[in-house]
Every structure is written in structure tokens, then in C-alpha cells.
Length: 433
View: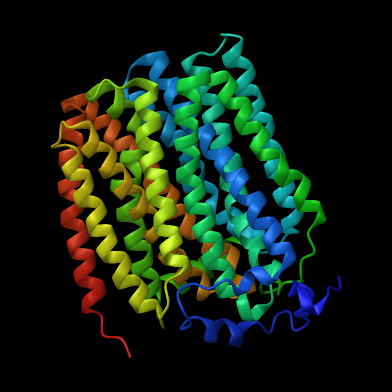
């Protein structure tokens, strides 16, 4: 569809598949500028996406708090978090390959509608007082299954909204947008739960998902290069996997993502148990800690927006390594403290760590991918990112039930710090041109 050249919309890009060279040029531009906002469609999508992701993550913290309220078990909190993320471990790459083959706008509408319906069920059952832990587990698994499709489909849509020359900028902007929203969402969720309860909070998250359903059909997107013809999904996934394993920088990006997600991300997933079980602060305390994490995410995102300089993929990875190491140290420190203000400050740090490492590693992975490969690349990155968080939550829950939540934080923080030092040695030791 045609668009006004002055607006910067994707209609400028008649070249379509010939988007490779402009992407290569942008990999060494400033870490962040606002050039992608010249596309009206991208601006609208960015706003709707932020609101929707906030709603989705309000849902996640609602599930965690409801699980804690029903059972008082850290293991159950970890298990519910695992169910929310586990489908991505199984189906994430498959849906990434699917995103390379289908109309991603229709796919995004379908998955967004399914998330809204499941959220409606969660709210109705909670308000009616009919919720049981097994019903909650089933809803968590279904939410995770739909989200495993929604993630790669939604992220694959982004480069089709802008000109090829600003794809790198759009990728970084949407990464900051997503990571800020996924930490702001739990913060808002914690505050809403403390003030209004679980049922009302679920309906609030449902309302936040609706703007995306209205926005998606109105967007004008450019055509994308199809994947290699005549090849099945399994063959395309293997092709993508070998491409990732064959490039040191992509492997390093996945390693940084895995360590940060398991240790730092997993600790945030069991925050309901930490806040109430260790500090005795209840839902209000959960809101405070997750608000601090959200503030850390926003501050980090804003600093990245205004950062300037020529950043190669190698430079991004080195910076991400340092933040990864800081994140594992923060988790270790969390297990050692008793002062509530320090806990708030450490949560701020965890939010910043999660945003920086996620944005930089996702940028490294996506900038290596063209239109025909991007969905699969995102699928594997999401598998590591989301799957790592799921595994971390499960580990924290199991260890905490065996030796206590403080000991779990100290143990996994120490192990994570050891592994992060090894990953840093790998990244900094690789000779780059």
C-alpha cells in the first residue's frame, strides 16, 4: 500500500527484500536515535504494543500472587511461572519459523484475542471465588502456549512497519519498549493487587490488551522476503540453528541471555515469595519491589535512547557481559540483606540489568537476520530468554522449598556469578576485526 514519503512509512521501501545493505550500515550507527519514529504506523504500533505488554505482564504477576495466596508455597509460585514460560521452550522456534511463512498481522490478531479471552476467564473465576490451584495451573499453561506464538509473531511484524534503512533503529526501539513494559507491568500489577485485589487487576490487564486488537488491522505493512521455497519447517529450523551455532557473536548473545534470564530473571519471578516470605511485606511490598524494577528498566531504557557512539555487535556484547555479571552479584546480595530499602534498591538494579542485556542481545541477533530469517532468529532468542526465566523460577522454587529462599538466592547468585565470569572471559577473549 502506498504511503506519503514525507511520513516515512514503509511504503517508501519498494525495494522489499533488498533490505540487507541498509541494515548492515546501521549496525555501527549510534546505539539509539529516533529515526524509526518517522513511520506513522510504527509510532502507533509502539504505543499500542507498550500498553498491551504491560497488560500481559500484569497477568503474569497476578498468576504468581494468586498461586502464593492459594498455597503459600514457593515451589508452586515457581511452577506456575514455569508453566507460563515452558511452552516457549517447546514451541518458540516453531512459531518463529511459522512467523516467517504466514501473514503476521493476522497471526498477531489471533494470538492477542486468545490472550484477552484467557485473561477474562482468569478475572471471572477469581471474582467468583471459584479458582483452585489446578485451574490456575491450567490457565497459566494456556497463557504460556498463546504467548509462545504471540512473541515471535509480534516481533517479526516490526521490521515490516518501517523503511529498510531504519530497521536497526526500530528493532532497538521495540526492544526497549518491550523490556520496559515487561517490568512496568508487574509493578503496576503489584500495586493494583494490593489496592483492588486479583479479580479487578485481571480486568484491568484485559482492558490494556484491547488497543492492540483495534490497532493491528489498521496498520500498513510492506511485503517481506519469503523463506527458502520448498523446505519444511524442520529444515528451516535446522538451518537457523546451524547459522546461530556457526557465529561466535550469536552464540555469545545467547549465552549472556541465558545466564541473565536464569539468575536475574528467575529471581524476579519468585518475588511474591521473597517479599512476603522473607520481608513480610505482603501485596503492597510486592508492588514496591516490582515498581522499583520497573523504574530501573525505564531509566535504563531512557539512557539507551539518548546514548551516542558507534557500537558494533562486539561492543554491545561486552557491555552486556558486564551488566550480566552485575545482575548475578545483585541476586547474591539480595540473599544477604535484611533492610527493606536495600531490597528496593536491588530490585531497581535487577530491572536495569534485565533491560540492558535483553535489548543489546536481541539487537545483535536481529541485526544479523534478514526478513527471511528474522522470525526463526527471534524464536530461538525467545526460547533462551523466556525458557531461561522459566528454568530459573523453577530452580528458585525447588531450592527455596529445600533450604529456604535466602539460601536459594545466595546459592544461585554465587553459581550465576561464577558462570558469568566464564562467559565474560569468552566474550572478551574473542579476537574481533
